[in-house]
View 1 (tube, rainbow, N blue to C red):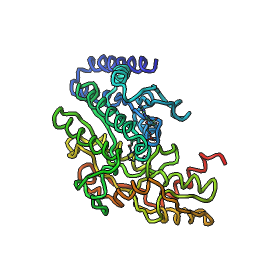
View 2: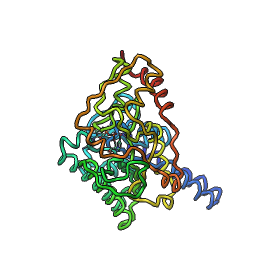
View 3: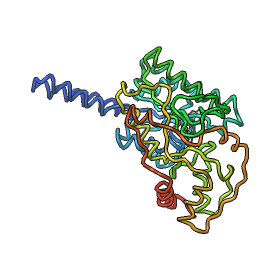
View 4: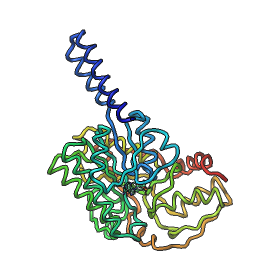
Length: 356
Ligand code: NAD
């Protein structure tokens, strides 16, 4: 129903604009106006919309393009807020023909593929992680190759780097020998994105997200999840047992910056996107001890203990800080949040969400 209304509204807007301009006989204005309408009428599909990033990306895109222009899809239902805010479809990212059907049904122009199995869960189910992470990407890239959608966003990760990568200020182009199945799938995905762009002209764009910190949705099984959980445990129990060592430095970013980066790279003119594998993206680098100290500024009696598990080995294989100057040069990227402002924002927003 949503989709029928959308198509009807789209057709009617174009029809009445044509009638109006027929009277005025102004071809240039007609062209400019139609381009504007088509730009505004862009419709977007987010696959994996109910996850940590998808939940916030859906809200942000709906604010810009309108609720009915952004279709959220996932293998499961999401938060009440997300489900109520616009069209939603149950969709398995492994099911190419259903993705095709939904894209045709809603006249989709752009697809954001957020469904994936993340690093820690991926180590438990390596074959499943590979199947999901690779097949879902091929499904979407093939759709773009066939001209059925015009633009694709697919996120990569700092997990593409490995123990042989320079760990400080990791450059855009460097040694990449990932040691997790998740990292291997992301690195392979980057190669395929570049291949589809070079070979078939597919407009695919990608970012190597660091660990993302947010208050709206829970993280989905990554090695950097501790940096979100620490806030929940601090507010609910005033103490936190960390699964990483106190001095494990990892690159992180506040979600608002990550969403803005995603929207900025998708809006940038095609010629400015010179790297079609994925861009390094840097935010804040900190250790568990450093974030705990920042939390203690808001909650002085908060305590932290350390009990490293299998995720320590994954974290040890990743860089501590990232050089994202290429993203800055090519499409003007800059992060806004530092550790202090991010922790303050988490302490402002999260208590509103938690039922104590
Ligand atoms: P998440 O686990 O929170 O969300 C993934 C979503 O995909 C979930 O809602 C899940 O239900 C859905 N999903 C799983 N299998 C599916 C399937 N077969 N079909 C449809 N949907 C399916 O993950 P996230 O943190 O939101 O990450 C999104 C993307 O960003 C992933 O590609 C991830 O690798 C990448 N990334 C995330 C981070 C981070 O810190 N969150 C960092 C680097 C990269």
